[in-house]
Length: 228
Image (cartoon, rainbow, N blue to C red):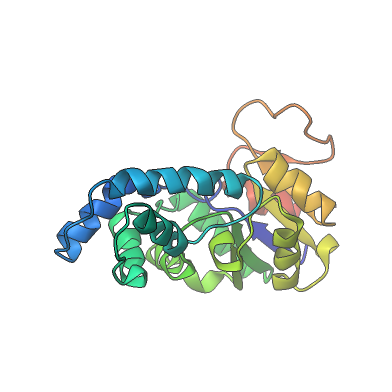
């Protein structure tokens, strides 16, 4: 395998929190000193629910769009939404990278393979880079393919096409590693990549027999040494 594409939440880190309407109100008042329109928190949560439905269909809705729609629903003039979104993500901590996973990434980097972070996330790419920097990994990845950056999510085929392109353009030379059967195994294999599943328990029904299973991404370097 010349390249490895790694999922984030559930693979390198425990999934982090996602902002809600109360978080938006808190940011407005504590960070900017702006009063929030009545009902804004409820409107944000309503729009978030609609965005989640679209998300499951492969469409990413930027938080700027979510907030603009929420402000419209409460018939109020929105503030600088870019500033609000940036402050919102700073106030809602990202997941912390597992130290064992970080060690595996460093080992993979020494193997001279291309490394791509490939994940669904609402978090902007600049904030995810900060998370990787805290873990000492930001320079270890050749590319970051995030749904928040490219506008569509796993298992949309366009997501995997972006991963292949970032990893050098040869799908059969890419191993996709993640913890979800449909998004991290079925989707990548349909795009021509190989896949490995991170699963500490019983493998899920429907897992192809030729897909290796590792309990933790820390086992990945050894798996690659044995790869046929």
